[in-house]
Amino acid sequence: MSNLKSHKMEKQNLKSSLLKKISWLILFSIAMGYLESAVVVYLRAIYYPDGFAFPLTPIDSTIAITEFFREVATLVMLVGIGILTGKSSAQRLGFFLLSFAIWDIFYYIFLYIILSWPTSLLTWDILFLIPIPWIGPVITPIIVSILMIIFSYSLVYFNKKLKRLDWIIFILGSLIVITSWVFDFLNFSTKKAANGVWTLTSKHGLFESPVQYIPNSFNWYIFMVGIFLIALAVFTYYVRNYKIYKNGN
Image 1 (cartoon, rainbow, N blue to C red):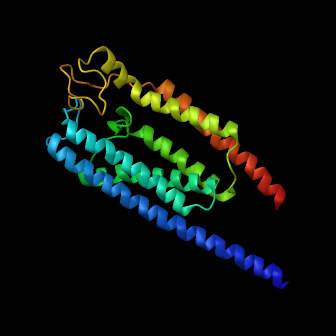
Image 2 (cartoon, one colour):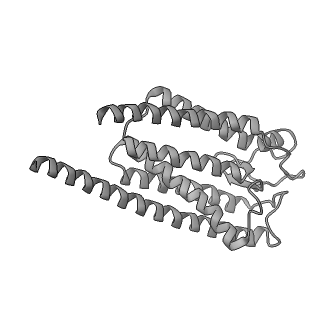
Image 3 (tube, rainbow, N blue to C red):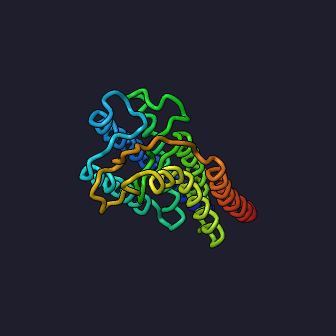
């Protein structure tokens, strides 16, 4: 009886410790979301005093490079919090995904509170600059973030490694989603922009072109194929490990 009671107390303590970690991780991610939105508020005050809109205002190469590496630093911080918080590779990945998703969602929440932007979930936005600009409707990263939260729950709860097929489907789906975000801008840059695609070594500024970029269309087909594959990876991981968990209890 004493061993059983001790085991239950140990399990309860582990659960309490995990909930405490998750609570602090969520708080950390919300704070990061605010910092991210604050940077955007400053940049828009400089480059878009009348409000953000396409075509995009050219950004000085020094500021563009600084922004590029700020995003790299953000990723390092998110990866770092995942590694420091998780006790296994599955938990580390789960905590990274959770932190990334919460950060991204609250970034838009704070922008809406401060700037009353975006005006709708279909508003176009610059999502990322690594390795080239990602551009798409606001709702698209939010959809991805929701999937990340679901996946993170499964990873942390079951604490089981992804199988090779899980990784292949998940990574392939992620790459397809990223393709949907860069497709239109890449097509414009290679065909119409005199300066071509902006890189860190470019001498010209970001979005500096005689023919300024205005989003033409978003390839929802490519995006949904990627989302389907990510969702498939999440679903198969959950179902497989839920069966193992159920049989073990």
